Amino acid sequence: EIVMTQSPATLSVSPGERATLSCRASQSVRSYLAWYQQKPGQAPRLLMYGASTRATGIPARFSGSGSGTEFTLTISSLQSEDFAVYFCQQYNNWLPYSFGQGTKLEIK
Amino acid sequence: QVQLQESGPGLVKPSQTLSLTCTVSGGSISSGNYSWSWIRQPAGKGLEWIGRIYIRGYTNYKPSLKSRVTVSEDRSKNQFSLKLTSVTAEDTAVYYCARSDPFTVFFDYWGPGTLVTVSS
Picture 1 (tube, one colour):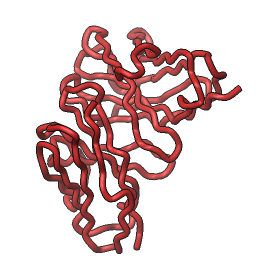
Picture 2 (spheres, rainbow over the protein chains, first blue to last red):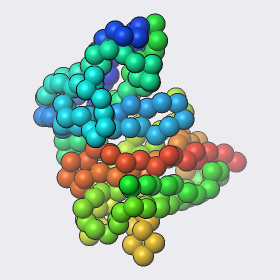
Picture 3 (tube, chains in turn cyan, purple):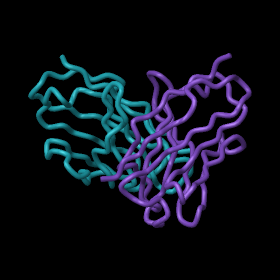
């Protein structure tokens, strides 16, 4: 099983600042990496797939990068609605499809 | 707009079988264009993919759960289902159904989730 490790577990950032979240895979997943945002009591929402392609309706302040084993999600100027938990997920056809444990983005 | 909705008992006794159904609206599960998965999340924890059904009824399961899991479909009702046998307290979680492409399995539509508690 490919293990996905996210860091940090919690990130405290002020509104308007940049947030950088990391995700590492235990083996290469090429660019088969997705990011999700989850707010309390809600299902996850797809933000990014293919490591760097924004899903429909996702604002341009969200960007993704990386390939292989190292990935980054960047939120360029945090808005109040961006404070949530973020998960990465690999889908490189190695079962099972696996998620990171999440990064909680909180208001500083 | 595709919508998914989970349904089923919220309380299951240990050693019994957890059964959930996902009803899909706004799209057909029998089109062959999508894959339909179950994912769970224990309280305060991360997401765990359980299994899926896709083209022509093929299924994949998480290896560590494979002996206890069955995902099936009812095309006449546009539903797919999860059965998890011999449950323990560790199976207590919010269970989500979700849609993906059959070959690039990231999840673009999710149900709201349903909490299943395993307790006597």
